Length: 244
Ligand code: UDP
Image (cartoon, rainbow, N blue to C red; front, top):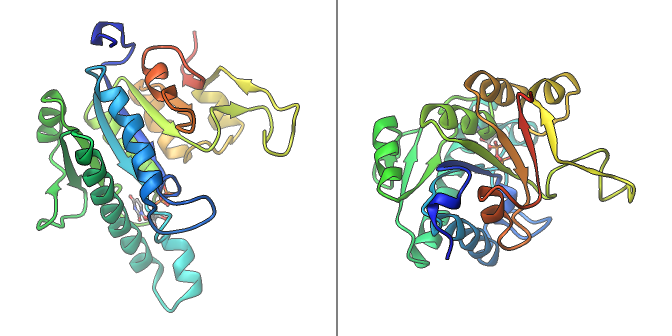
């Protein structure tokens, strides 16, 4: 068992896309994927580290996409996307609780019969008590994504690192799926990510993390224990910060 004192970060926010909750190439919600995610989060909670989670909704609805394929206004589509994140948050909540992890869901878009509204001080208090707070509803505003929502919550609840889960275990020199010579980068600066338009997160999200001094860590949850190792200062990932 690791002790909290060994962890590099005391409070982290994990950004997980809707894609992380469904089977590869499919939409909707997949029980096995949920369980794998919850097990990885539990490993971090068991360190005594405070955890927040921002969930996406792309496995159900993306506003910009649905507006092109149905007679739905784009703004409505974005609200549908935000509601999709509430559905995902409830799924993550029950799965974590099935493993004995205490949770709360807080939504930027009030859905008060099923979860709390986002209240910053209350969210911090929950985390201090060891509850995982799952932030739903993105920013509560259309035309942005849950990456921006994650950066916003990260700054508001003052996390030590924003963990961005992706399909691969960091940022590579080229697409590792297509290029066998692709190399994983251990470190990048915010300015490199912004200037080179690396597309890891929305630029507004990277900009907000830069202004708030919150390191972004790009990692994969595929390898069990990797996120726990990253929180301990080990593990495979790419760190994005201000540099020297
Ligand atoms: N969305 C929004 N405002 C927000 C966050 C999300 O309008 O603050 C909508 C937007 O349409 C987005 C959808 O919700 O496409 C799902 O979120 P996102 O695409 O970020 O999900 P992910 O790609 O992380 O699964």
